Length: 294
Image (cartoon, rainbow, N blue to C red; front, side, top):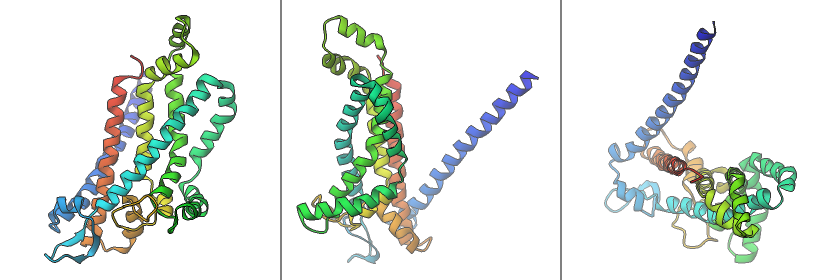
C-alpha cells in the first residue's frame, strides 16, 4: 500500500513538472515564432531593428523599409533598470545588515512585516503614487513635463527595494554564526566582521538578490508606463519623456492586426524581453552554482 502511494506521488509530481516544462517551452516557441516573423516574413533587418532610432511601424523610409528601430525602447528599459538597481542595492543591503546584524528584534517585529507589505502592493498603486507625487516634483525641480527616466527610476527603486532587501536578509542570515564568532574572537570589531566576513560570505546571495531585482525592474510595465512619458524617441535626458519595451507593448498591442508588420514587431519586442528574462535566470543559476559560502 505504501509502495503504491509512493509511486502515485512520484507520478503526480512528474506530471506537474512535465506540465510546467511543456508550458514554458510552448511560451518560448510561441513568442519566438511570432517575434522572428518580423525578420523572416517581413524581411526586416535584425541590425536595423536593434540599432534603429525611429519607431514608426506604419511608415517607410526612403528605401521602402519600415521604420521599426527599437533602440530607444531598449535603451529606456536598460536605463531605468540599471539606475534603479544602482540606487536600490546599497539601500537594500544596508537595511538587511540593520535587520540581521544590528537590531534583529526590531527588524523581525517591525521592518519584516513592512517589507512583506510593500512587496504585496500592486504595481498600479506605485504608478499612481508616482503620477501624483513624483512627476509633479520632477516637474517643479527640473522643469518640463516631469515624465521621464528619472521618474521611472524612482518608482522602480521603491518597487524593487523590498524584494532585494528580503533576499539580502535571507543571504546574510544564511551565514553561519561561527563565522561571526571566529572573527570577533580574533579581535575584529562588529563593523570589521560585517564588512570582512558576513558580506563576503553572503556575496553570492547578495548578487542573486540584485539580479532578481533587476529582472523585476526590466519586466515592469504598468507603473513605468504611467510615469515615463511613453515617447518612442532616443532618451537624451533623464527628465525628458522616454519609453521602455514594456510600455510600448502595453500601449500598442491592442491596436494592431495579427499577422501584420505592426503586430509582428511588437512580438519582436516581446522576444527581446523574453531573452533578457532568460539571461537573468541563467545569471542567477551561475551565481547559485558558486555557492553562498566558500
